[in-house]
Length: 345
Image (cartoon, rainbow, N blue to C red; front, side, top):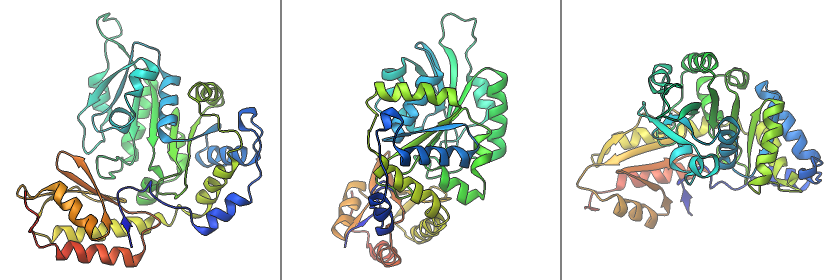
């Protein structure tokens, strides 16, 4: 039995989700004629209290479309130094939008309205790019699944409006934050110009993300999606999994969070562990003591049938998800306790 905890992107559709796929009615989405995609987009937009949505193959695409929407070449984007849009999207901000990036050194991937204010360029200084967009990520991937405080996001939103800055949310794991914080999608829909949500992580879908925004933003986004090659034709089979997930797989995320807390508790008891980022949702990031080899630890766990990833800088990561059973969790915890410290640097 392989216990794959590298990411929540490794999930396989449940039998119920597969049935939803086979039952889907489809059409040509480039002509806006796929009824299941249209239903998913309408459902997601309504859920967040926003005007419209666009179904795309990936969260990278929805983020990159949003950045392109809100900027002009030569502009600048403010984001955290750990942000996915900066670290894991292939340099897309520069490649697709021709923008530079102002990185904020925040707290586990989160920053504040004060730090936005400190990093806006003077629009009259011709030596510097014009600040055009603020991007936040919730939950934070490299920050160990940390969640923003909604009160801080409200301050950030108000500041962006006052200063003519667009405000985008990379909500790849937003539903994890909503469940953990007991917040509603509508609260977020009121704050952001655009929101990207992934269906293929905690929600358990095989493919897909949604970009949410105004009707005008989504009209423009549809054109950008086409340019990027994101028109998927009869993709209602995939969209059906999104509808199923939004109806059935949100509240269950609390189970993923409980499993992550159990992993955190066991790691805290082990003498080979140097540091663990505080666990809030479904991501556990930890460091081994300096005498241990990250690569050897990963290989040792692989030999035991357990997969995790090294994120560099000594950070190792487990991510819990819908396909992790209680039996798998028990085996993982036993292997963590049984590790005898012989895997040395």
